[in-house]
Image (cartoon, rainbow, N blue to C red; front, side, top):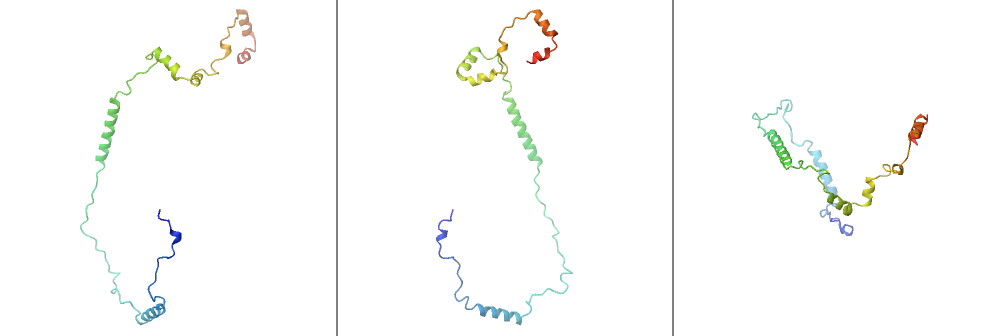
Length: 159
């Protein structure tokens, strides 16, 4: 900005005319004397002027220009409709992507090159797979009947 060097200015830039303060008292006395001699300014309105004053309005009114908005609305609706028509005619939504269309080689190459261990760990969370799902239990009919007859069967399920 232009603030550089403002603190080094020695001169304010304001000047009074020569002999201004010497003739100041004389000018004030002259003005006061003139106001005493001439009590009225000389400007006077005629008698009853404001009582009979009427504003004369122009008889012909100018017609203002009106810009119709309906043309702009029709144009905007037409342009929106054309944009939607072009958007839907580009066949953006006709592509059917499913897992049957993927080849095994594509999946293998993705898993080997692109996927990392954190992505794979999200697929198999700890809440879904537990060790008890992989243990093979040998239960016979007598054991199942005794479990069903037990009154605390619900508590066993919860454990």
